[in-house]
Length: 258
View (tube, one colour):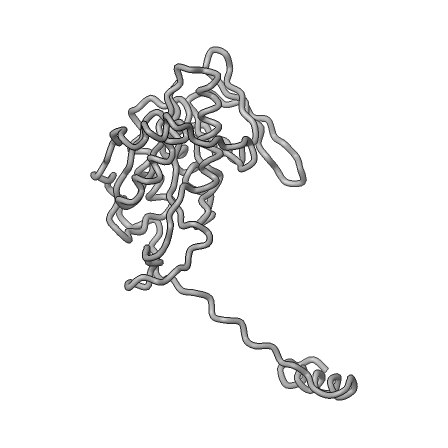
């Protein structure tokens, strides 16, 4: 069994964001980038399968600029066997459809039995890349997976999907298949010292030739900006009667009410 886990590099939540010179994104200056927390659950689920089936090989793949290598090495520290980076130019925006195109190009001829994705990324929170990769590769897929079990002959996988109002849906899929993993399905492990040492020296597969993008981009980033500050509140002076009169006057001035 070969499992591909797609991991994304995202800014740490506590980072202070500044717009870049293009006005279409944020500057990397002063930002600490980390492995997307949602992807940690997907990676851990793949590693749990490897614990049960020792012949399983787990490959971590990330797409982004050169700094993305750090995220792949973090996945190796946690237990992934192999790592690969699809490099993009600095400050180059790829929407979920175009990201899915690059991942599908990597995975198409490599014989992966399972493709795992975090349910979404912590920065954009779209949750679209996994299903789009499955569509491009014509694979069966399930989203918001909270439990999975592979058949003994490795031909099928049964999963539980989280629905609204606490409901669960049980789905059986033929392999190969793609799954987006819900947070809370497991408890991501801490890296072992041996894996941390291995991750420092292990050679990564670096891909610099991107898949050709279709004519007319799926999505184009037009502008990034901070929301305008909320207007300051108005404090009503005087006693209760005076405050009530002032409030009525303000409402009349600003609406057609009363």
